[in-house]
Length: 148
Image 1 (cartoon, helix red, strand yellow):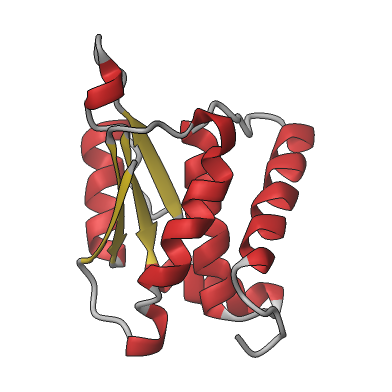
Image 2 (image 1 turned 120 degrees about the horizontal axis):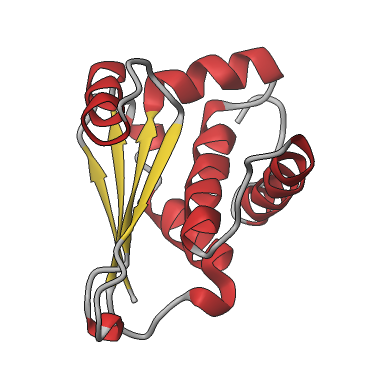
């Protein structure tokens, strides 16, 4: 599967960690990854995320991550999905949770890919399990410390 990372928001070079986002998303997909198809990870700003939320989900607010899966007939050769991550929201959440913004970004990439793999977080219990799995994946691709 081809995994692309697009930076549609200005962010410091350090956070343009394409070599980390791709394997984190791939690991989260696990057995659901495809030999063909395409996964796009798109880093956006708050304004863009709010517009996406409003246009596609009828939510008039900013979220940290949104995933859209594409399931066409004969989908093995079709695009697999898109993951939108809001850099500014990730930075805010990282500060609140007292860990690094890159760690948060990798966690969100994994979280979005887990959604595409069929995971759900519509209850507190499911959300906690999904968040734990996403954080474990992020830690595998980033030497985790509180400053990263």
